[in-house]
Image 1 (cartoon, one colour):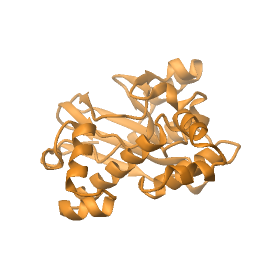
Image 2 (cartoon, one colour; image 1 turned 180 degrees about the horizontal axis):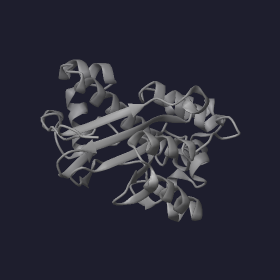
Image 3 (tube, one colour; image 1 turned 90 degrees about the horizontal axis):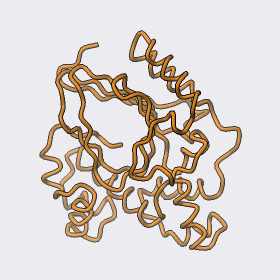
Image 4 (cartoon, helix red, strand yellow; image 1 turned 90 degrees about the vertical axis):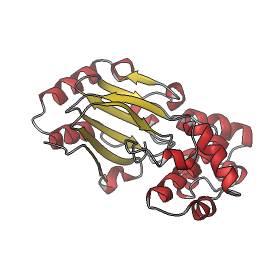
Length: 248
């Protein structure tokens, strides 16, 4: 496969795993990219590239930048916020702000997966192998995960005390369980989800005043503060850049 400069594609999963997995994705680059920016989105990804192997990318608290070699192909599976733990076999809270070799989490299972991915003959085959390696959890999402799903659906504009009650927990218990399941405390996760929504709206060309209102910010100053915290730059500066991941 050849890319003119960079190609990012998302593949929506089948219904069976759609409540857990947001998408499978692939990224191809024709030229080297020194610092490919990825913004916080509340999600955890399993990522594979031949150059770096399979990794777990934990929930981000700030924008991170990754070098990409010319002709590099990167593949990933992105979990909905709060839904990665059943697949990882570990608490997502262990990975917040970190990138960890999948072998350190899965052991020999990860080594076998990397061998299969390395032998794949096409990008589509890589994605199929990565998706098929996950299966589907036998259990349904629990009360905490359902509350996090409601927060996600509301783009973070949801009262966290209501979410705690929805999960059948006290505010303190819900905070602890939210960190365990998503890697972020509830209020922090809501801020990230609101920021993600603002980025989605801005990418469509929505004016900044409308972005702030539709994403749930008090005003544009509030929006700018979150952008500075999560990216180190103003919204206008972020969206003047050309080599930035759509999200996640």
